[in-house]
Image (cartoon, rainbow, N blue to C red; front, side):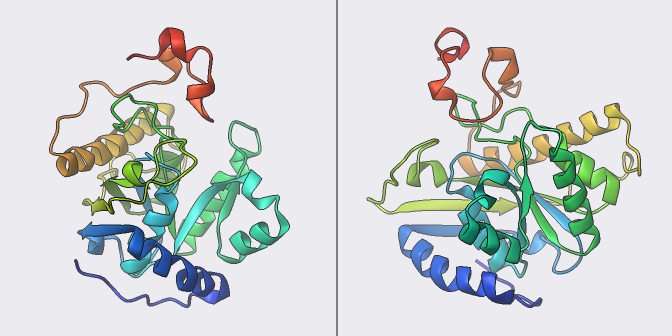
Length: 258
């Protein structure tokens, strides 16, 4: 497992987080980091991943940080309402997003600017934890594609597996014993050069989203040693709400596949 030293200044928020979180994360799970050096050492970029557990952002931050970059997240706005946590997140350069609202456009603009400023922005294109019964990557949303096409930045897909054993999707308590193993693997940049434009068409955004999700799914399949479903799961087609714990959705009993 090769790591790369951080070149940019961390600032107090990242220095504090690293000093607290890394000593906590390391005993919780063993790790296999694969090809993390494919994340550009400098310059604006997007890192896009599948989403299986609420612990994913911490593990992703560890992976990105170990390969020399400070991760900037699109984080749900509710986290910023707590004054202490909000000040910390802002100091760490995280970007608030109000999901399913008109104000989400502001998060898009902020993410585009962060990429243009040379930051490494982390996006979960599914927009929430996967609803796929087998925890495969589901149908993606357009945010990551739109940022990529507007900036022309490298889009680095990362597949990971094992976080769901540490903390089940929508679980409240981590399962610490036996010690879990996390695998994260970065892929080559997603080729979007033929789609990149300042004002991409809806068709271009849809195709870019498809390519991004395909790249992530291929990495997850490689890690799992299994074949993914022929068609990515679409929550809307199964009557599931787009965000939140779908296990609490009464429609799930009727329409969610077993």
